[in-house]
Image (cartoon, rainbow, N blue to C red):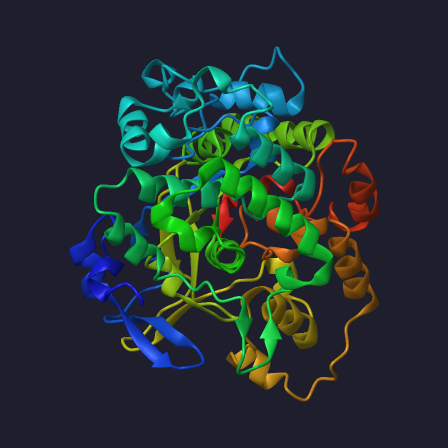
Amino acid sequence: MAAPLDYMFSLCVDPGKCASSVEVRFIDNIKGKGLFAKRSLKKGDTIFIERPLVSAQFLWNALYKYKACEYCLRALESAEENARRLSGNPSLNLPHPELCQVRPELHQACPQCQVKYCCSECRQAASDQYHRVLCLGPSQEDPDHPINKLKDAWRSMHYPPETSSIMLMARMVALVKQAKDKAHWQKLFSHFSSRTANEEEEIAHKLLGEQFRGQLALLHSLFTAALYDDNLSRWFVPEGFRSLFALVGTNGQGIGTSSLSQWVHACDALELPTQQREQLDAFIDQLYKDIEKETGDFLNCEGSGLFLLQSSCNHSCIPNAEASFPNNNFLLHLSALRDINPGEEICISYLDCCQRDRSRHSRHKILRENYLFICSCPKCVSQTDELDVTSDEEEEEEGEAEVISISAAMKPIRIKTAVQSVFCISWEHPDVWSIMQIATHFTHSLILRNIHEMCVCV
């Protein structure tokens, strides 16, 4: 049973304004529902702002000291602290430090497990919604705690670049367990597609491949041991767990936050004399070069979330809208990429910018395996006569992706940040270094500063 349309706008910052701008319509049995404009939208307009039903930071991202609010994913490092860590220069001083919007004096920690929040409101919201179930208290660092065993197993199967998190599933369970009105939340989650196959097109989700059977069985066992609840028993049987896994993999929207990126945008907005502007731009350009040399390409706090209204957006290889996170937290801004007429469908791209430039055959392969549909957007229709072949470069990259074990079964997330959409692998970790080496040939082709400043999720 899908969530009623009344619920669709419930997590928008301004539900009334949103409901007057867009509507959710049923299209057909193949595409399901879609999001449509009710009024004229201009290029650059913010169509709506929405908070997620649930979100979580990626586990490797947190392990590598990308400090984010446990609730809203706001970056907790100051821009200067962030720049020092990423550049490897502990004595670095940023000009115009007053432009940094991080407020350490507001930060709070859970008194039991010490996880960090950007403010008291976020700490209270997390406690009210899910954290009482997931709080490990003094066992936070205990490797034998069932939840830590689940996290460790996930990390061992799902190396960076991360596309989802088992903790998103854990928070779904915790949210329902803590809720007074459990049926309400289960109804909201039922809105998201969780099918593991498309019988009409005879397409099965990639995660159902034989090569992942053992890994999924282990995750299922650990997930059940850590979180089982009688009220959610259908999520804990093998088929239900696979559906939950598919729900997160298919609907999870990447989230990227960065205090440094916010500081850079604020610097760009300064009105300065020509010489000072040139000096500041030169400083920032050099900073990004130093960061690229020292750290690579993963600059942001990264995670994923489930967004109720945004999930109604269908895919197009030539989208007319995109999602971004300009507030340095989990608030999703959906913006128009061009003018959109009343009655026109609002589409985003499920592919990153590299994938959208691939052949029609390669795009269809990614969409079939991860989203269970065959794209019929105008771009794909116009390329119908193309041969169903994949270039040598694309075949090589697809082969490399398979090395990443179960992570290859999760969707190539709709661009967590603009940086990660282009630079696919760059973590200095011994377990992934071999993958980094074979990925090097396509990871250094664009200007890092311009990409990082976008902080766009589409």
